[in-house]
Length: 326
Image (tube, rainbow, N blue to C red; front, side, top):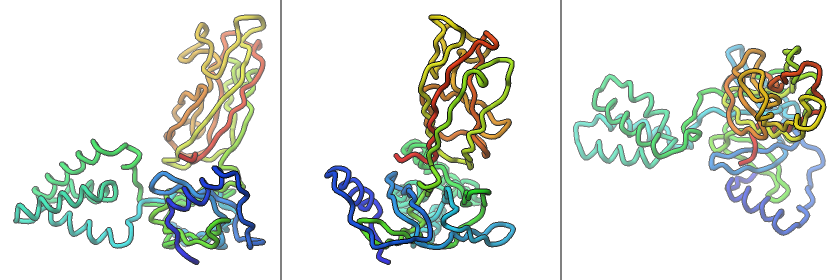
């Protein structure tokens, strides 16, 4: 295995082929342990490869699980320090309470240079029993929050591995992911630089049909089960298209944003809605939703009901992408 620079792999390996319209080199790999996956990296880029390791091991509170690579739908990686960074950041946080003013200032400047990597340690340090350390850590936390977008500062201490039939929560102890790309051959990706992995074969994307006759009728409170699993802090893109009839005749057509003139409650009639889990908070999809919904579980969808029971017809085509490429 040879390491690759991840950003270069995404930009040069895959972007260049698209720009030239070239066919990728023939792979010498006939059969691999897993299917094709898309890996999202810490810098926001992504790379496609085939997993070559037979499984991903995750240590849970119930023991270690080895999830077969070909059954993995998605992996959400928790926070990890790059090699050597944890000890350095820990020492600098301790130095925030140093008796020497210049050392405290130098430590603060260096920690700001670590940007989001230093954020979790600084958040913990705001509760330090040492008043000087807590004060300076709070100041640095505020500076990072003012400087960086919120998504850069979202961290969790556990990993999630979503397989075909279950989702495991725990910690992946391996340091690397082994894969194969058509341009770089066998590669080893540092997990500390990876934010998520989704299976292309299993469909990080799903397309569903939302029928107005069932899901916009105010006599029916059912929600469409999209069969898409959402694990906490999972970004999702949902795009809806089409036209429905709230009532026969001209002037009753509605798109995914609903009809501006008719409503039977909170939302314009026909508005595409969604929620995570059977009792999660409802959020508006409309024509397009891109964000991180609250909750964990299956994604459910319906429409804001029409004022005319039994009169709705037509459907919306909805495309759902978990961990969309950015």
